Each structure stands twice: as C-alpha cells, then as structure tokens.
Amino acid sequence: RGLCLLRACPLVSRCTVRMQAQPTSQEAPTLTAPSKEVLQLLQRSQAVAFDVDSTFCEDESIDELAAFLGVGEEVAALTAKAMGGTVDFQTALSTRLGVMQPSQQAVSNFLAEHPHRISKGIPELVNLLRAQGKEVFLVSGGFRQIIHPLAQLLDIPLSNVFANNILFDASGKYAGFDDQEFTCRSGGKPTALRHIQETRGHSNIVMVGDGATDMEARLEGAASLFVGYGGVVVRQNIADKADWYIYNIQQLIDAVKQC
Image (cartoon, rainbow, N blue to C red; front, side):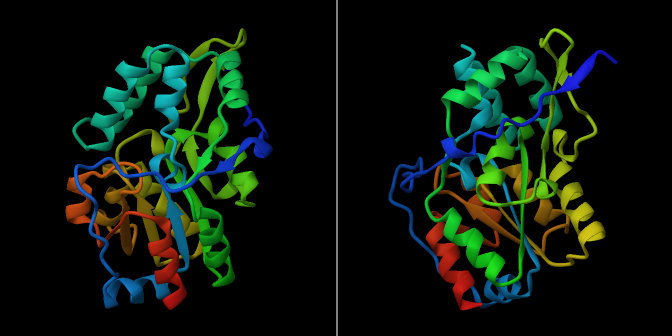
C-alpha cells in the first residue's frame, strides 16, 4: 500500500573482524569461570541466540546510522534508555526512527561506508557451535537491512535472523517500520525464542547479549540460560542478574569446548 521493504544489501565482503574492544568501565573487569550449572546448560542447549549490536558486533548500528544522519547524540541517549530497561522498546524504536527519518538511499549509503566490526572470536565461536550441532540465531532490535550481510558472511541462514524492517514509501522516504516483527517491541526477544522453540523443536536455547531486552528472554523463561556480555559496554544491572557474565568471547569459546 505504497510501502516497500528495503532488501538487505549483500555487502558481505565489507564486514571485518576486530580486535576485542575494551569494555566501558572504570576498573579492569574480574573474569569469572562458568559454574557447573552453566556448563551443563550449555551442553544441553540445542541453539544459541545472539544479540547483534554491542555483542555479536562491536557496532551499535542504530546509533551509528543516526550519527551518519547527523542526529547521533540524541538517538544514542534514547538507545541507552532502551537497553537499560528504563523505557518501552517499541516506543524507543519509534522515537529514534522518527528523529532519524532514514531514507532508502541514506540506508544504502550507510551500508556502503560502514562495514560491520565483528567482535573478536565470533567466527570461531559460530563454527564451534555448529560443530557441536547447535543452531545459531541472530535476534536483534536492529534492522534486517544491516544484519543480513553479516549473517551471509558467517553462513547463518536468513531464516535464523529475527530483526526489524524499515519501511519506505514509493519515493524512498522513511515510512515507519514493520510492526509485525517480534523484536519491534518489549518482550519481542522472548517471543522470538518461543517461536524458535515451536518451529525448530529447540527446547533449550542460550541467549547471549548485553542489554535488558536480551535478559528478558531468560526472565520470561524462553531461554534456559542467559550469558550477559560486557565486552563493549558494561551494564551493571545486567551483570548482576545474568546467569554468567563475560567480558570477551574467548570465555564463551572456552566454556563451549568443555561441553
């Protein structure tokens, strides 16, 4: 009805693997080993779902797209509220996109100029999980247009990606977002994981992420284990409630190897 979905641009060759970012924190973090229970849950898991921004990648893509569009500071503040759990996610998403007003051409230009900064260790971890017969999913409040090239780079099926779609009118101007996507609203990530359980038969799913929307999946029982990630930004409220909190992907690789 005058709206269209921008297809993900296959710029897979522009994705790059980065050295481990230093987490935003006042003191050097203390690394903790996984408990016996965490290792058991990892071993029993059939799938691992990753948040994308500030976890699977060092990017916070909504903020970076906003900066590209000249409204970075305002949108970054709204993102911090959303990830800190102090504002409803759908409201934050709608407000951020309303401020950004991203056109179809602007999103295409952003994709061309901003390769993903993949967190160090992610390619090895994805391969290791596959070798153990575990499916890998990307569950994000970000945008399919930005995430699909990343998934393609690491051979993650696009059917394993749950994220938001930006809508454009016939002239390519911003026209909202697809409100049928699971992750456009609070509780979307637990809903996405339940959908995975129902359609893929995975009763034990691990959620890995940095924010409140990721932790929701565990608190609402959709994930059997929540691994909080502080390798880019340390969120103390998440660290306090996670089943296990890590500061680099190597910690998770080492744990999976013990399974």
